[in-house]
Image (cartoon, helix red, strand yellow):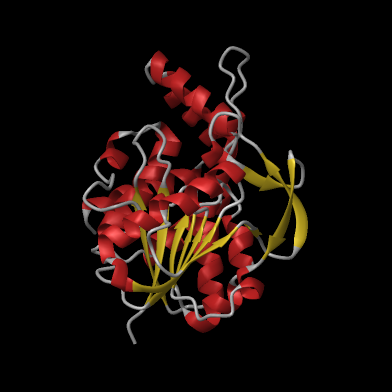
Length: 312
């Protein structure tokens, strides 16, 4: 084995030999050794976005740390499955770095894996070219990802692009920013696993963190990609603030029948890192998997799972 394999499997061995409470105490002890300013920054970040549980240092509330301990203990075999199915060592090292970041606040491993050569989502080592694509962008926001896509692959790389977003202000900016491009379809809809009435839970700090939930501020109608799009889809990008799993469940027919390239955010929920690739694999086992991180090494957000159809 190489040093990345050794590091990963040594961590797996530690997790298997410890109880959830022991893992939690190790995480908490490691967190206490982090510089005070960094601890406060992590506390503020977790509480601002509320994806991974709360941290309240003053009142000794470390719910977020216990949730990570629980995920490591309960799903270490799932992480081993993912590690074995990742197709390059950059992905494997990143997975090891993320788990070691959770376990002992190791920042250095993730730092060596952060992706800067290519645009967010469009890694030319993973997706070297695109032609005649039918692209779906879930969480299109202000069109930044589509602009990056066109910059990377050219205006002649796609037949049609479907953009979905749910916030009035960003939807207006989305249409303005992409107005010069042809064959863009705009859908002000929430995408989930069924047609339903849900709500937009507005994040007052950043519209990019608005999310769909059972309670919230604005009533939404949800749809599914299987219902909403009849075209054969060749690429799906998802960054929808924790709703990625439900959106995938509503896309299983496309995933099974079309084998689209999948570019999925897997950092909004501790379990998504293993759960989303396993869901894809259970639906269609003709995929290769990669991980890339476009965030930071303190807390590795902007972690993307690439599921790329195997060459026949």
